[in-house]
Image 1: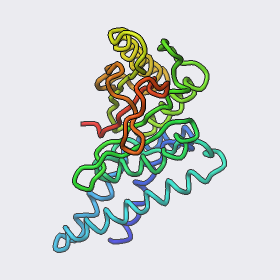
Image 2 (image 1 turned 60 degrees about the vertical axis):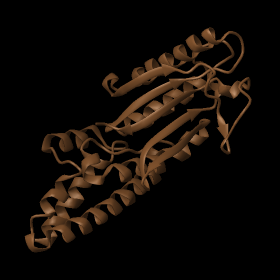
Image 3 (image 1 turned 30 degrees about the vertical axis):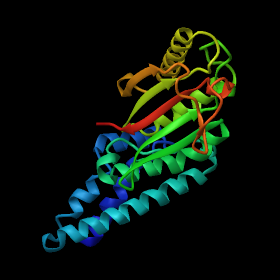
Image 4 (image 1 turned 45 degrees about the horizontal axis):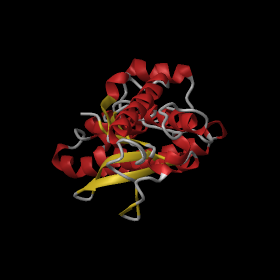
Length: 247
């Protein structure tokens, strides 16, 4: 029976990889409705007397297998430079903290190459959100809200990452540096947030995953080592994307 459970667990791992699979494989996964939590759910019933302990052990083992599988996928030549994600149905089976930490581990390096900083927010020792901050110096020109060149590449890469982790919700906040009237800065920051939202959706992220879209003007300058930088600095022309588990 243990061998059967092990087989189910291994099979369920197929849904954790959203990149590098053929269309036929993806269709097979969908048609058989195998989710990340299936192996855990079935594994818990094989020995009721040790159910709680067994489930915990299997979950830990399952998480380890997910990490190993993702690492192997990222090493494949066809996946070099790609964001390798988790399929639908994984959040419940893996747990919120593990899901977001896995997302961070697989996104941070590629995001950094694009000038995007990814940071974690924790509560009670568990990761509850991620924030992607685009380098304002390359994201938006002074007084403008349109994305061009490197700024557009940033959004495209971020959207690819978001698409690879479908069980997340996205909150977008725009910012401006402190030049000119604040009412204009407020409008500009809001326009930048809307521009980012539209670009993310155009790149294949479902609109229903977008939560709040707002601008904060120049009221929230970037922080470096815990200290606010000069509000007039151009790097404050930015958009921040908060990534939280889908409710």
